[in-house]
Length: 336
Image 1 (cartoon, rainbow, N blue to C red):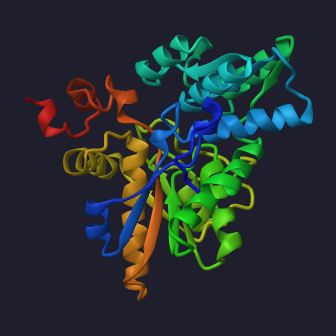
Image 2 (image 1 turned 180 degrees about the horizontal axis):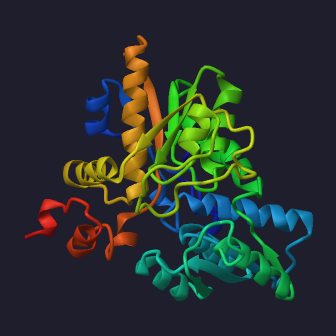
């Protein structure tokens, strides 16, 4: 439950984020579409929750000891969350990230005091993939733990215990659908499991970008990718530890172009500056809402995740030259 009482420390600022009715998306879907404002976390993304859950779990198990180092491979946002939590709790941070992620994320990690290791982007099967590199560095560093956000189920556990509970309370127990994209799978699996515990009829939908393999897995039982996406932090080619047993009822595949349409509308019409993953999530929520309405649920309520702030993508998503170089539509105001 969101309260106005003072928090005892910065860690307590993580979670309890607002839920907002998205007017344009609701109109497009014919039912209520809500966005969980995860950009309101201290690290400006949903990954603050996973960072806190993983660190607290490592403390409780005794694996992480005072003054230790937390090593993680990440597209950026989990690293930012880990760095902030680690600073607050007296730990050091080493972050391994593909060098094709946004400059803003790299600059933020350095500003937070994290040791940043950049590696070329490569397939997960490559031993030099950022995940495998981070595991090796953790093994080689005295007093370090590997956060392992993809397969460490402390990630999804925090979403079962916090995100799902908050959504249920904020909508007073009337939730008909939830959807978001998967990176680690922690958010969709955790929120899905948490909502299903309360009402097994809540529809949980995967919203997958092009270039990822989960859409075909849940639709056809085969991990198969199609197309590409420039979205950072979402899209997965394997069933991670967090995705095992995820209660996915249906799935949608969303293009970057459709996601960008919602990024543009959310900023221009509703005053929210968000990243592409949020636009893709909202497109998926509209698709799920339309599906529920078509099945006779005109009063349906669908929730999705507004993952992070668009200010993290000023050199990419909000840069006319970058968009044009990717063959993507340029927001009208950027051309002026």
